[in-house]
Image 1 (cartoon, one colour):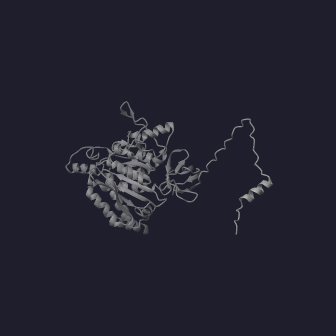
Image 2 (tube, rainbow, N blue to C red; image 1 turned 90 degrees about the vertical axis):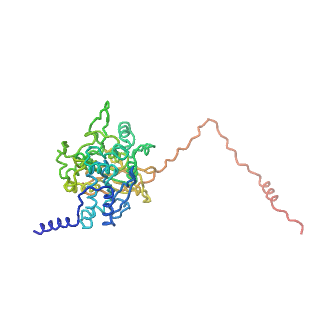
Image 3 (cartoon, rainbow, N blue to C red; image 1 turned 30 degrees about the vertical axis):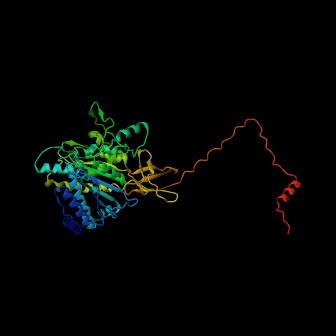
Length: 462
């Protein structure tokens, strides 16, 4: 009986302390909502902008942390990005709801949420394409139909086809040898991307993100890399073919975590499509070049998946509550997945933190690096692994690690400076001629005495 009372009180309390505003939010409403949450939870939140859209609207992010604005060593960073396509709006509204939920449940001392906020630095960007959203919302108000109205940014560019293409390089490197992570950008990359894309690239290069999800609409499925197939085009036609990353099993698990925690995604049949377990490799669905999730994996330490969350790209306001209830648990569970695998510090012999040290896992051809504070995070499935840390000027260190299904295993590295090899002495070849050593010249004793007397000063007359 006491359990039933406890459950009833919890539900009643949740109803009272977590009021949800189930409606669509235009840009000004979105900004007000972010600052409303910040004002209600000022000690665990921070609002910041990563840049501006073509039309000058801020690309706002709401951060949750017990120390907002500060990276705590060994505390992982995770992000959600919504509304990349302006007319795919459910993700935008879900992330606003999630922000409100995290704040209210933290204030209510929900231990699961308290632990999540205290152990994780969470970044939530409700809208990457605020200009496109305003076009789509205006069309909805005027009852103008159009599947693509508002999809692109104000310059008419699809932002999920606008990131530098690093897949071409990784496929070449996999075949011929070359780097398997942190692939460099072309020198002129800034001139090739839109303002929103540039802002996001600079953002993900500034934070050592470990895990991410990009929220879309138009289907119901969890999509994981690679998005671009190995043979992207064959005689002008896009080729669909399963194109796995070296972390394919891990990505499948991350996608399934979301799908099975979701209200109905895992059932597979949605929007006229069927996806077993509610997940798919991106390239096996359709090949997409210059997408954001592949870019995260190939240029940073971040593992990102794409969440397609609704058949209707712009669902009616009356459907938002059902969608929130269907996604709420999945959104929380996915954030919790950042706490798995291994993590640790990389230091030198004097306990100085080493940034950009490379962490390699035997059998997985994708490395990660330590961040500016010397800490690293490597998502891994349970198992036993051989892990190596390397840094220029230091001897590598290799350890065997057994990873469990719960908390990440702490694995620290202390690298020793490489001892420079002494250069071999050059031997002068023997020409066959003997070298005569001249003896030191010895003066007779009498001559030495005379020379000494001559050097003494002579005294003058008194």
